[in-house]
Image (cartoon, rainbow, N blue to C red; front, top):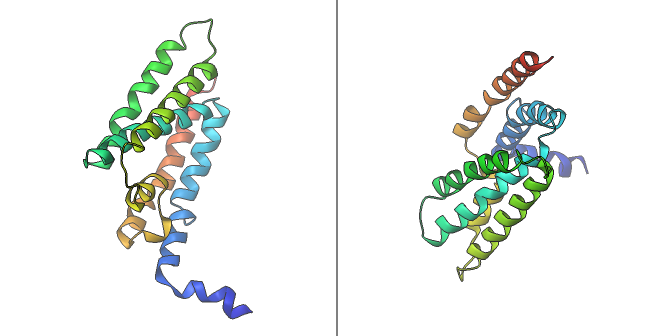
Amino acid sequence: MIEFLLSPWELPFIHRAFAVAGGGGAGLACGVVGVYVVLRGMAFIGDAVAHSAFPGVALAYALEGNLLLGGATPASPPAVLIAFVSQNRRLKEDTVIGVFFAFAFGLGIVLASTRDSWTTDLSSFLFGQVLAVGPEVVWTVRPSGPSSARSCCSRARNSSP
């Protein structure tokens, strides 16, 4: 029984996955940034911006372009539009975010359905694959945890009343 539980730890990709997910990299960064975002009342904006990247990724995939550039390009205009539209005092910010969230995700689904073949390339790009990371990714992600924590703590300290 114990061999069954310990045998996955013999595989090197399991070591890399846990180094990225919990070893001071993504685990620390997501924990600290997540608390900061929730306390500032901005949790829903992260979802909206993330889902607004989906139409760009689907369009880049359909046109066989660069998926990273396709996802990064359409992610920032909705954040600016949400801030602009939410300045209207009649609409709450959560309402505006929800409209952009649903529109962007629906547009992404429509664009993704234009291709006949939905391969694992696009789904692994969208959802990630922590077991497929290489050693270079571990060394890239590992410093992001402490630096994100430091940045959030200094920003929270500077914005306190």
